[in-house]
Image 1 (cartoon, rainbow, N blue to C red):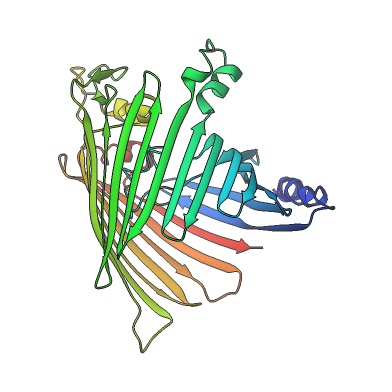
Image 2: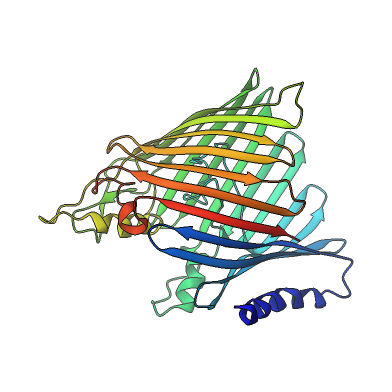
Length: 380
């Protein structure tokens, strides 16, 4: 284990030798040791590094992760690797593998039409070209061209379709009007998707009210048919709508303490393309009934969050995501100790509930009735 870890760490630390002539280079990251118990004990060691190389008119950033499982098999994951050009102060052009977290929600982000499976934890990202234009402090205009599909086709064994028809184009415009933050978005790929979206968030006496919606216009897909191998086409546009409220309170007498609460609703009708819902097909296939029928996955969700954090002491977060049609839910809790500078100690648990043919109940077949996580994160 020690030998494999040294190799992982050495691979990450060799990269700083490359930008020896750079104007400004920085390296930071984290080493994470995690153990998970759900009937069987599993452990993992990972090292994540974030490299930034800055010049006067451009910069390079790479964020990647190396992981070791119990068999000491290294696995490398490249999260981001891109170059940004600062042509004028208001415009930034970026090319490479990147992430653009669009949306105004807490747990659901319908206006993030470029990343439909955007979650609270992360954004899956894309490989392509993007531009961000800030004409003033109130307006931001984003545009992106996603090259992922043609690149995957060229690298794989599948027949490479026409390059330009395989591209995905997306845009996102946000602007403020008083206390309201308004966003308009859209994504287009020939023959697959045409999905406009809109959202708004409003600060009302310290409460953040948000609502987002997107509509799949290009023959969006409903949930999988009983064969679990294909999708039924919808004859009408399908909606993806969310709405929620969140509040963060910092007592005047305890400025180091913050209290957070949030509640958000999602109607998924569904608005996702076939490729974007592939993982749901794989999950649902576990719940095929003896007669060959497949339960319908939930289309309405509610997310609830409650959290408390005391600066340099601890943080506690309780969350629940419920699928309303099938009465299933996923409950989670995480406690972090923040008393040691540069080190986080964490303990958490996840409990799925619901029948064996429900969306979150199906998780029991994968992870068991519960999961307990213990972890240590060292920042550098």
